[in-house]
Amino acid sequence: MSDHNSLEKSGFPAPTPSTKSDDELAAQRASDKALVRKIDRRLVPILSALYLVNFLCRSNIGNAKTFGLTTDLHVSNELYPHALAAFYYPYVASQIPSNSVLKRWRPKCWLPLICCCWGICQIFMCFVKTYNQLWGARVVLGALEGGLFPGVSLYITLWYPKRECGFRGAVFFSAATVAGAFSGLLARLFSLMDGLGDMAGWQWIWIMEGIIAVLVGVLAYFVLEDYPDTAKFLTPTERARVLQRLSEDNEGLSSEWTSHFVLSAVKDAKVWLQAVIFFCVLTPTYGLSLFMPTIIANMGYTSGIANLLTVPPFVFGCIICVLGGWYSDRFSTRFAPLVVFFATAIVGFILLITSNEVAAQYIGTFFAAAGIYSCVPLSSMWAGNNMGGKTKRTIGIAIVVCFGNMGGVVCSYLFPAADSPRFFMGYGVMIGLCCVGIACCVVLRLFMEKENSQRDAEDASHGRVWDAKTMAEYKDMGDDAPFFRYKL
Image 1: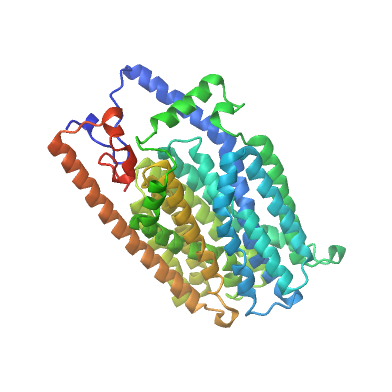
Image 2: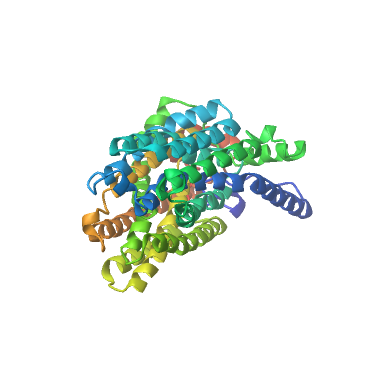
């Protein structure tokens, strides 16, 4: 078949030949580029700010620990991991219900509301006096925070075609690494308020960072828009073009909500393989976010200096995460950068587990943060790109995200105080998970590549030319449809 009749490697059927002239197409591309930049300027900064305070509030318990939390509350080394893990059970359980509310209500209201709620919860956490109260507060915090990541992941797809979501997802998630950097800086700053109002430094950390979350939530209400067709910052022509671009991105598959598509997602081995990959990504990610201050403090630094030294690795990780997302979208690939970043993280954890030199261990934190944080948007986007049909994608991503976030429970127990200062078990498990992640990526890539080749060969042998009419015959087959191509 000719090139314009072949299927795109991105997983979507080739568009029908355009009747526009080259000048008209160039003008349309320039107009679209300006439109996307306008949407980016409006939405991406505030969405990133929401995720920054989301990650900040969940992980600042690690900073609070270095400033006396466990001592003041008489929390033993054995009980502390349980307080960490308490966050993740409701965090996972609340994600699907939260997205259901988001679909039925207004995103402009729901996302800012849950942000304000977890900020208020964070503020009141300063009043906990016992381990049981700390455990309960972490449960409530997890339930309130759980809706943001899947909610924003869904919200982005309402504004951007799939081919543009990878970079936006990377910028959005890079806020997690910025949160890691800000967490150390803010913790050091707010800890200086120790004794003010008869409160300890760790209490002021929670109060002030909770206030920041509430302020971001209020700001988000005034900045976010619900949907493109009602966006006040766009002109009527721009609104119509956004909807047209989303329509052109339609993959020719059914968007109906039926049990067939739900079961298809649950029974698909590829979905569960993606879930394992995401688990292998998030377990080390949460490990670094929760324990980085402790890891650096055990290199021989005081609490204040250790919190400041967490900043450079996370800033470096943020830069690499954004560059990785850009590269992935620019060259239309997920597998290659994902494997490279897994390998980068392995190098970092090997330096941490094998070297006796403080400088080498600290350099290891740079490799680990840059590698594993960059894997998060790539792995989640790869999963979404390769699930055909709206319903299967919705259920499949829910499986991937929920299973992956259980890594937060696991990592809570990987760095016990008894293992300090080297934490051989924690680093060893991280290395093992990264290796498993690479192996799963290779298996998934080989299967998808083989399936794409077989479908290409069948199209060539039958002389198939895909258009809206011929694709409609297979619309209920999801990613098993003969015109669907997996994104590699």
